[in-house]
Image (cartoon, rainbow, N blue to C red; front, side, top):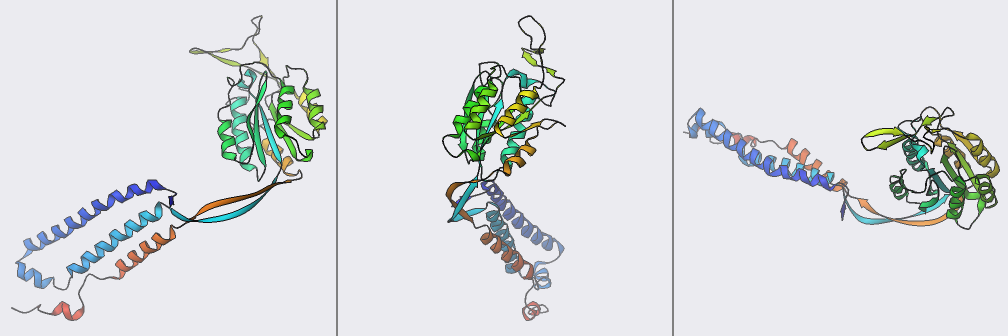
Length: 341
């Protein structure tokens, strides 16, 4: 047996409190009647009220709360097996982690906005395998192709500009690493989403794009940043400075669209540019959804059956029974001995 919401067990600690409240209520009522008149007289005047029935009503309310708590913890037992047929494409997201991604022409920064958008992009995938590649001066596979979207998003949270010590932006290396991550297989089901500001320091991005096209990989480039460019903030102890080159000049990073557009054309993919505070992955997602799907195999899922309905039904029965149960005696018993001396 498993519980979907075990924290709800804490509510059971209220039951002893309710028992004490009921006991105090019954005791206070008895003391109030004793102060009102003689015990024998008050016993005769209140003989229409049944103390056992009052106790039963209190027990029913306590039982209602108890079974309601059991329902809230969401008990699950009994395994249901489902066979799921998976169809989709293989998608590798390559994210630029170079220092230029710290620029804030897109808030809160290029890198942070890209991470948020990639997470939403993963949520929109339906049956597609997804992998992650991080790159700067060099590249590596951060998460291999997987159907576990939760694991992919967990790897994504670790991405920052300190992830790769080799500085620069080697787009060609990123494309080759992503191409190898797809493995050997049919080429028409492979999509690479390349998110970068386009400033290629490797110089072989177009050659790598041709190799990817030969392997059947379609590259969808996402240009992040603005044409006007922005300074690159660098945290220096307790103050923020801006990145400078070897001559001491402040570096300004600009979006290089021409390289990304050529990569997209060479591979039959597409190009989108960040605008309006977004990155543009919604458009990329819609383009990928039109690609031909492949059979990713059949997966057997074992799930525990939800059984919260059972304690909930018992709780409702207790509540209804308590509402219909009167605390007064039957008519004949109520008047018996009322006027006897």
